[in-house]
Length: 167
Image 1 (cartoon, rainbow, N blue to C red):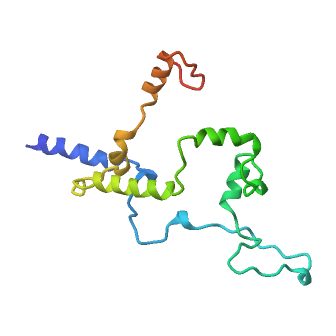
Image 2 (cartoon, one colour; image 1 turned 120 degrees about the vertical axis):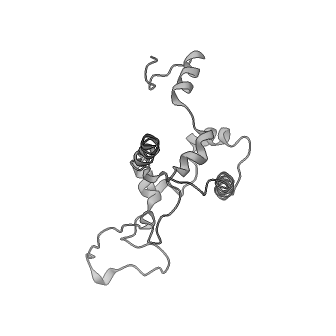
Image 3 (tube, one colour; image 1 turned 60 degrees about the vertical axis):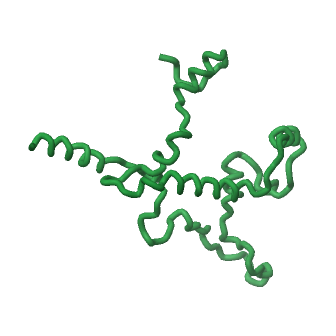
């Protein structure tokens, strides 16, 4: 009897050691979401208080950060070109990528589809004895096995220089 209890308790104790990180889709607390907090730039004193710009209510100010502009700079782009439209050199790429049509509300559509998918997958998973990785549970059927995919491309004759060598 002790062995059976011991064999049941070992997996329960070891499962508590799992590190899920950001893969848990549920918000465990009622506190603020740390990803919604935007840090501001440090305040600076203007060179002259008599030549301050006119306030623009609802618009950004000198200490506001722009995630879009910071992302553009991080990828080597120019923030001033963000609103300039598509450069001529990228026109053929954009035309090819949108040849099957472009949905204007793709983000909303994907968010709704994903919410329905997760709700459907979570119907009978609410009752568990131990915590489960909900992300892995919901999306396990959509995961890509990197080794199998690399082998498939190698067998097709494609060069895979950044892939680990075949064993």
